[in-house]
Image 1 (cartoon, rainbow, N blue to C red):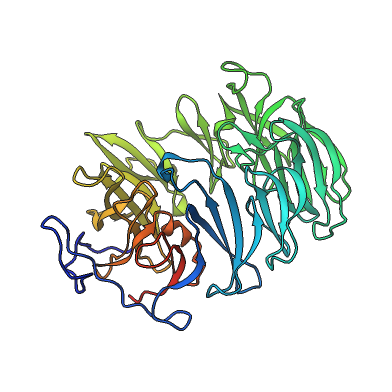
Image 2: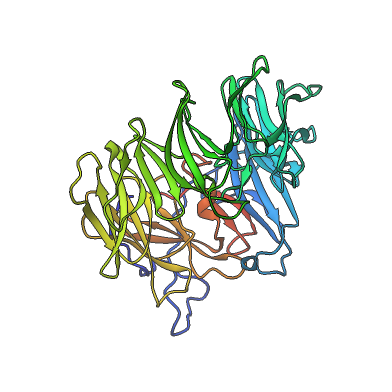
Amino acid sequence: MPRRLVLGVLVAVASCGDGSRGPDEPEPLPTPAWDAVCGREAPQLVLPLALGEHAYRIDRIADDERWLVSTFLVDPSVPLASGPPTLDRVIRAVGPCGEDAVEVARGLRPGGRHGALTLACGGDGHGTWAIDPSGVEPPRQLLGGWCPPRSTDHGLLTVDAPADATHGALVLLRDPADPTATPQVLAEGIRVPRNTYYGPGGNGSTSLWAAGDQALVLDEAGTVWHVELGSGERVEELTGVRELRVSSDARLAIWQALEPSEGDSRTPVGPVFLRDREAGTDAYLLGTHLEWTGTPWAGDYLLVRDDADGVRLWWRDGLEPIERPAGTELRGVLEGGELWLARRADGQTEELRWHPAQGGEPFVFARHDGVVSRYGDGIEIYETDEALPPTEGRLSFVPFTGGEPELLADRVDQVHGRVADGRIMTVVDADPSEHGPLRLIDPEAGTIVGLDLRGYLQSPRLNAGDPFDGDLVLATAGGERPPGVYRARVPR
């Protein structure tokens, strides 16, 4: 994320109302010089929002100019920050300028795609539906079981089981586009894809792995079956298995033995092995709780989370263990096989680069007291400040090559985000409804503009994936314009 010093409060070039302010009120931010979008030089309303309705996701409809806007509704009298129950969910399709808005699903959430089909999941994550983006046909349920299902060359694959069940039937819907098609049962007693660490339906739990024309599944007896999806034929591959992880190319698998060595019987510690599926060999790695590990494959490395020592590392192909420098924890894998590490030293956090093949002392490229996230060729550092509300702080950038932190913004919310061109969008002074002044920060130009007085805290996340091809997404609750989702174009 490019970087230049950004001042927290700029001298305004425009004022609001009659221009009067209290003695302790800050100078209002300048409003943007809006570029034309949808034929007008102002934000374009894409979807009005009802009282208590909040947008949380925007998806482009394939081969179409329209978008799917997903919202949830809560009791507007209950502060959103207190976590009120969701009363309903709605998915609507809208044109690029908000035209022809139509409700396409209620009580469902987006679930991805399979071929030309647009999928949706049950509000609780259970059950899969096909939805019609035109809104003409009602949602059509395809499968039970946790959603999303696995998309394969032969259709949609899932474990069909009630929401409270741990095992069910492995089913394959070979032609999801055919309303008369019914799922084919391939096996019974297969564990549902969920675990205590990743929750229901999460891809971190691979009791069901599938790609192309094959699948690997784990049954209630601890047997791993290889399934040819074209024929439905099953072959027993491994027995005595509690947990399973499979590499994307299906050549390697990590598995935990069924019999625990210690710990809670529901989430036990046990021996974990690496299996070379081509050679049919197994090598012992460590004793741990594999359910805590998500995807263990990262570049040249194999990563397993250990209950005692944090993340443990091995070379992916050589099975040689890698001992990290003392006191460090793994942040991630960088280009060229370098590891991004961190450690505490002298009351601060040090960010490090280190290559196991080269050894030696790690390179310290940053020191700070905050929370970090990776961005581009470096890291952003979010640090709280006693002068700001508890959920706000300063944002700085340090490249992986090192250097002094460069201040990007001296006031952002924890839920801030980048738009497509690298500018930062954030709400400040968020209220219990998670709305507040929405601003756009340009670190390169050193400018800040105010987008709306009552912007939604989730607005930065609505811009993820750049749904409007470079234009901004603003979600508001009746600040300077009626509540809704807006499309806006702000020049740099």
